[in-house]
Length: 85
Image 1 (cartoon, one colour):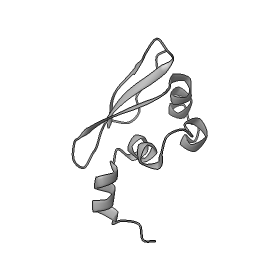
Image 2 (cartoon, rainbow, N blue to C red):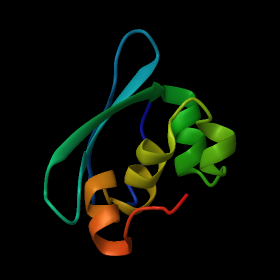
Image 3 (cartoon, helix red, strand yellow):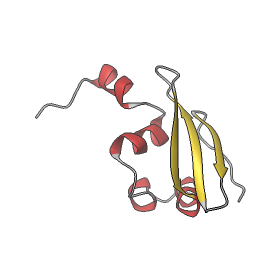
Image 4 (spheres, rainbow, N blue to C red):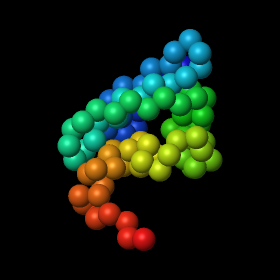
């Protein structure tokens, strides 16, 4: 499966033989690399414009934010503060 990686913080995405996509995402704040594994077709659907909540509902909020903005949870909290209860 071939596709264009439109986000510079997603530094690699590779499909395995089981139909899963492993993406390596580098946080734009701390430069730490994170690995996220998803269904390959759903991942491509997201890259092609499907809303991430529809395409990848199995991911948690931190994983979705990392894919969307390239910001890990720790850096997000540093930039925006922790959520108040």
